[in-house]
Length: 310
View 1: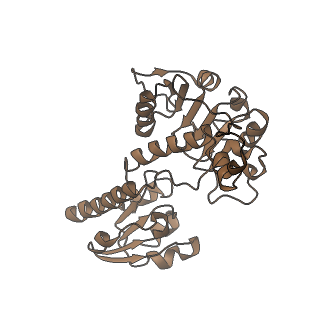
View 2: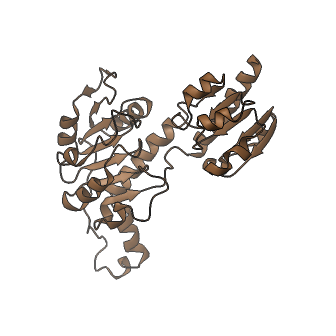
View 3: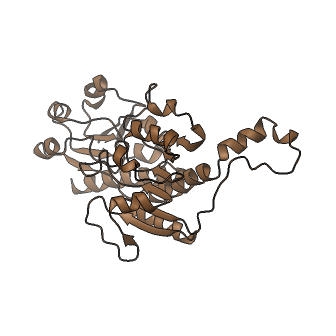
């Protein structure tokens, strides 16, 4: 079996040795659009994280039997074209729940505790010149008793709720699909969540219901001092409106995802004046060492289960 991994760079330093045992494996760090045909040619199995496999690619490769997506989302594959061509498409679910939940709290605490400011204060030796033992220039708060609203209450949102309860947070959630009805935690409408919560975290997919869900109008409901975290997908938040809200409305914002990735050099977040209230990371919340091991294992399982049927 001939297998090609199109964007290995997105998996970091993951061990691919077990994948190599499944057949003849070709590995490309990245695959640009113009390279797709050359990289895929003669391979029966594709492994892609973000490389787009559209109808043109599918119809040009009649030898394709299986497309393995090294992620949960399937929006980079033309599923209808694959089905028409008799190509099976398999994704991976649930591998990053613990990683994203943990990262949510890492991002929260960096913003709440103003870690960047205090680290800079000590690294520049300003503390060495202090007349007292402590320095409390930027206030921070405890999350116990704070109202935490979760937007998107799937596996990750529920795991975040489990951990937040241990810290003593008062929880509520908004179901972006309208289908989730968890009895243990209060379900509220979006305006109520936005206007009453001290911490808001987003764990929803990007779709017709969530695109630009948090726009200028929505942000106007958010209280000054609220922490808004996006661990879902870029495009859920209007980033230009958020940049203004950070400076003008006193909102704290952390995001691991942006509408366009990699981040553009002219992104509005670079213009934010209150940088201490902003934290951006390069789409890494999913990528703990353990999550990537689980992901590779699931990819292997997807390929071997397909091969066993064949």
